[in-house]
Image (cartoon, rainbow, N blue to C red):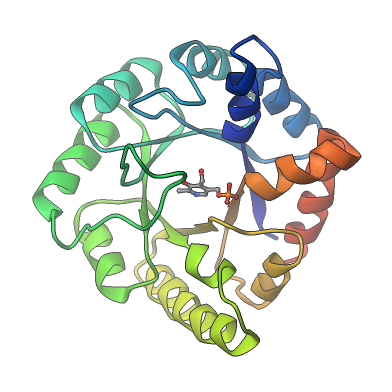
Length: 239
Ligand code: PXP
């Protein structure tokens, strides 16, 4: 029985498009929890393009399930995390010009840096997840650097243009999930998952959590946020 963590960044993106105070990602988080979500995720970016410091502070005070702060492993963000104390942090790479997170962390290339960042967060009592591509090398290095959890990047799978391509990419995810589970890491997956392509994950019983944002917010425009979350909860809870 897998958990669903709902990313509310996209609600904030809509708010920022008007530069006013609605729709509020904090309200969305409350509705997601009422609809059965097991956690709330927000990404505080260096440029504050969607979630801002006010949102993060209020989410910390109101989220009753589990607050997962996505952030780059940089000094400013580590200081904010240590002050705000989300339940967990997911470290992601961040480039100012990207539309969304484009790939996993290069843990293998910057092991000392990530081990240090993970250590500081864990000393503050925060669980640490590394967002990585489905590469066994990256997963083994995440384990060495002290990650508690790995979130395996499913974006390339979700962008596959043919069934054969999707299947080949899924097999890489499957191998990565197995390696992470063998190392006793917590295993999450996320990026680009929607109500159709998530079904393929039903066989991956070691995946504990699904991190999903865009497809839920997209569906919410037509069916309402509560129903959109509930339908995704129903899908992943049977995995
Ligand atoms: N996981 C990570 C690390 C992400 O950066 C994102 C996008 O914010 C997601 C999951 C959710 O991806 P999507 O919005 O495509 O569901």
